[in-house]
Image 1 (spheres, chains in turn cyan, purple):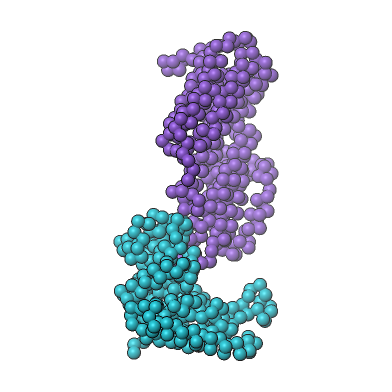
Image 2 (cartoon, one colour):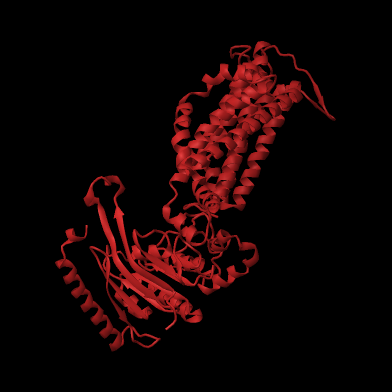
Length: 268
Length: 332
């Protein structure tokens, strides 16, 4: 097996409530001793209940936050800050409202100062996410699903090696959701881009992923990693799919039961 | 979608408008001059004018103006409601002008020489047009320089305060304290510190613009959502991109709020400074006209001011609408 593209070693992260920093109980152990390797070209999902630190973990990979302990590397290099090599799609509302769809997508090129040389890429990415005809619309004029497609195109235009997705479909209705899921799969298959998706939707994780990381809260840690051994074109209603779903839900309730037994105070 | 106002109603509104001003024209033409008044004839190119015919010409131009506005409303239905709604007000304007003409010029029953009639006010443009124009341009230049410097200073300090916490810590208290001082209080200081009247007036206008623009800009920059900075950073943005392509565009609505209130302040200070000691300008013109008791000229200068300031505000609104076209509820 080749070297993993992302390596996470013994990573912990503590959140301190700045308003009450003198009080010891105000700091929360968001992540504890996380170890994870992500292979090049794989689609990995991180699932877990809210508060399990899945978004925190993704932010660490993205370089938006720094861990208090442990190390994250990408292709052997330490992650020290955000980098266009790691595209990031936020939950929602991260588009620049003062820019049109076209200019939002071009913002990635402008931010890196390569807009002049590579402006031809913009129409290509507008087409990729199927927003032809909406080039000059402003974010408030388009639907939530379209806005997320713009966010995906904006992240992809920099040709990142990895795409980090922080519940990008969390606020969308189920039809739009399925539509964007297929779009992501299409992009993933086309150029084997590594993708890491944070979600709380088990179906979404099974539908898209090669592997699923199950996390548990208080403190946030990885409970287990499940490989999804289903064919590439997945049918959400097939018996294998439903069996997988049942299996993951079973592991979830087991994980939660274990987590509840643990005395929180021991970790803080 | 609201129902479109039919063409018939627009035509009726235009008719009512024209009727009002037509009454004013006919009144001026048909009512004889009762009070004593010397009527001089002015030559303007090949045309000969006296105060009454010039007044009627201006009324005619107002009619043409409103007819053009009506024609625009016919072409663009979204302009119709406003045009139709204002018809009675415009009709009343014509009647008020008739009464004013009657009382001020024809009968001279208003306190004289303080309230001359409308024709006598407009006579200023025949008598003294070039000099009034010169003073208008003086005002415009003074305003442009003072307000312009105020905008530049305000934007620069606002961005620095909003972006750098250290600058906020050390400079913001100074902005707050100096901001609440009415700029008139700087007057004696301005007159002694600056080499001439022009630069001291520029200083006053700049300082009264500086505060609202700086504080609004800083506020706009500070309230930029963290997620937008993060999104930009994951796209590979450096700090300069975050300032110029994220924070400043985000602050634009607040920046325009600041500029608009600064604009009002600057008008006030422009006129105050001109009345206190400028060698020209509309405020100066009002002052000297008052000294010579030519109140028609005072009103003429006020009229020019009203028009000039309205145009400046309208231009500012147009720029604002264009820059903020991305905002919710605005239509492209």
